[in-house]
Structures are given as C-alpha cells and as structure tokens.
Image 1 (cartoon, rainbow, N blue to C red):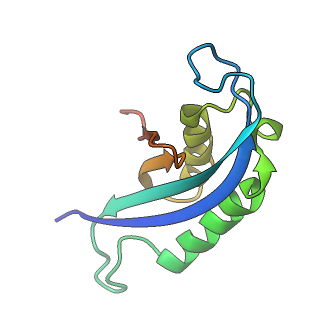
Image 2: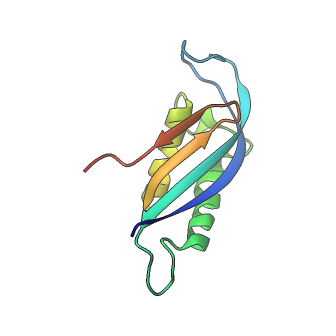
Length: 119
C-alpha cells in the first residue's frame, strides 16, 4: 500500500513577470502564495509515517518561507512565472526530501503543479 502525506505553507511575495501572456506583464505586484508538497511511499513500520513530518515542516520553513516571504521573487528567480517558482521550490526540496508532487497557488485562482520527471 502507498500512503500520501501533504504539507502546506504560505508566503507573501512580489514579482514581475516579463511575458506577453501574463495578465500583469511587466508590473511589480504581490500574491499570497500557498505551497502544497506531497510525499508518497510505504508507511514505515516503526514510525508509522511516510516521511519525518517535523523535519519536512522545518525544511519547508527554511527553504520556502524564509527566503520568499515578503520578498521580491525576481531577486531569486529569473522571470518568476508561477511554473518557474514551483519548479524552483520543487528542486530545492527534492534535494533533501522525497517529494512526489508540489503545487503552488497564487491566490488569484491559478495553480502550477510539478512532479519528478520519469526516470
């Protein structure tokens, strides 16, 4: 059996997207973002969990909340579209946690979802 644990963290940040497809192209503006990270796997017979949740929560605070909250995403990510920010966060977390899926919502009805590439 495969189990899934999802954790969520929010942050507020500004960004400017340089894309003619963006409704707010070229304008610095802010969002209240929500990141949801999913972990999947066998339930550990000793701990009863899929992942060490306190460690995962601490890493979410360290790698997502701390660098992004009340910042300007353009200072960290080139042309920070929703998809690029989601991929950036996924990449940072996937180096230290077994991330199965990550979604990033911008508070304006849009959500980007990223998953690991097929092997």
